Amino acid sequence: MNESATRSETAPIEVNGVTYRWPERPVVVVCNDGGDPEYLEGALAAGIVPNTARFMKAGFAATAQCVIPSFTCPNNVSIVTGSPPSVHGISGNFYLEPESGRAVVMTGPELMRAPTVLAAFSQAGAKVVSITAKDKLRQQLGKDMDIAGGAINFSSEKADRCSKAENGIDHVLDLVGRPLPDMYSPDLSLFVLAAGVKLLETQRPLLMYLSLTDFVQHTYVPGSPEANRYYQDMDALFGRLDRLGAVVGIVSDHGMRDKSHPDGSLKAVWLQDELDHAFGAGTTTVICPITDYFVAHHGALGSFVRVYCRGPEPAAVMRLARALPGIEAVYDKAAAARAFELPLDREGDVVVISDANTCIGTTPAAHDLKALAGQRLRTHGGLAESQVPFILNRPLNPAYAARAARGGLRNFHIFDFAINGTG
Ligand SMILES: [Zn+2]
Image (cartoon, rainbow, N blue to C red; front, side):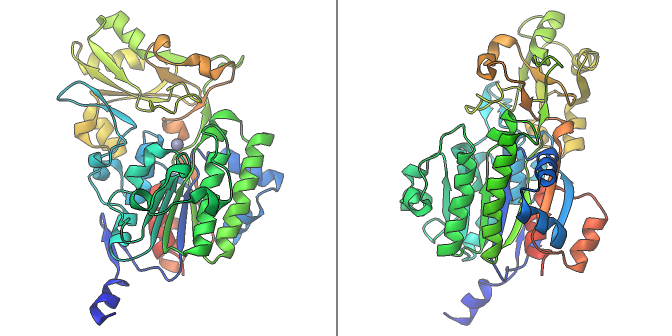
């Protein structure tokens, strides 16, 4: 290896305005999808997460703000790019394309406007791994990673179909020693962590991102036996990552709230119905950007929607929305983009956010409510789900401790803190 190659493989790397030093030891960032602080509090109170408890005491723990809308795609892309949606362009799972008026899934890597920390290190010669539970996130998280050069990128959902050419790895089920997990089970996430442990043991990547899924949090309340069992199982795997010598950062994409009446029935605002009634059918389009094919556990109901106006003025839509019980905040396009650092060209004319106990849908027939099957709806998207735990297994150095003390911590600072803030 010549001198210039050596230097380039350890030089600091700038990504989206943040300079990352070359880590001395492996760095693993875990996104515990839907990991509302209440789940951690329940598990800590039960005394079943000893590794996490130790990290919080000996390392660093705080509460951070996620990106609004508090949905999975915008926050995962924020975490891997270290930037808000105004920089990377992914502001929901779905948006309405202005030119065509079509609803477009935002999981395409071509919609991303910023490079990821993972890709930058991969291209500089570091061994980089990204594993996600849901395959829908895989391409964005793995965008521009150098698979031919040794990077690994796959989902537990399709772990049985990995190839060297596409994913940088094959025979994943054999490596992990677990069967292909069910889509709607805690195992879909635990498989991701177990695969991360195996790869850290066998290949020792420099950077690893492990993104879980929120099936458990959508389904079970904090402190319940099922939720605590999941936290206990995750904690055991966090402990193994720690013992293998990695810097471990744990963060969440968003929180989770119960959106039901006291009797357990759904507490929803049917906004398209309300707007059609007031302004006429076909004059507005409500887009629920939580929508994806993976909806059985939330019926595509969240707490943040975008309204596109073809007839009524946005101000009239805003007046109507503000008057509806259960609505917490209403913004016009420019104000929403400014308040939440969202890309203006992908914003609706009006943004409507419901309160902690209420969700927003279009019209009942458009949502698969049978899938809820008598369960209380737990979901996210709004301001009430914007607080997430931010944990490192090692203490911060003085510069980052001072920065954390100043406040304003975001979940997408986790790679910065894990790489630059420890040691
Ligand atoms: Zn999520």
